[in-house]
Length: 132
Image 1: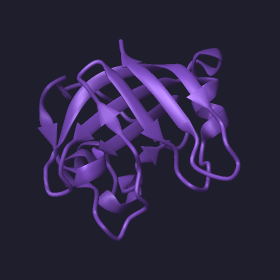
Image 2: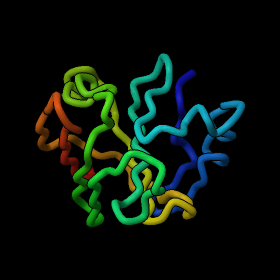
Image 3: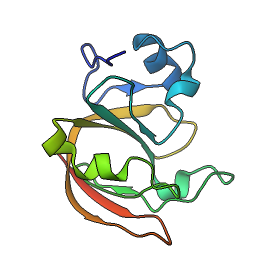
Image 4: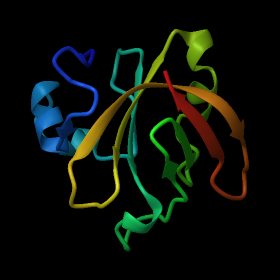
């Protein structure tokens, strides 16, 4: 089911529960990963929590967003790295939701584009994006 960003405003805050309801998911668990790739859709959706605000039981990521440039670690399982790198060639869009602390709602930051990446096999890869 394609995900719509109609009615989602840049700068507004959203919980995963609210987004799941807006997008027709039964629960927020469908969008609980840091990178979500909705089935049959051309969107990649990043849910990024800053480094110091991450939950202690989760994989530790080195993430930084300054309002324009986002630098992140990819997941240990290297999920969707090829798709992320080939976003433009594939006609995909990347959307960013960001928060500083795990208990905060996410702020929708808009569409972003990949500007640099470093792929690794023995540790998380690094990606740099800019807000469009």
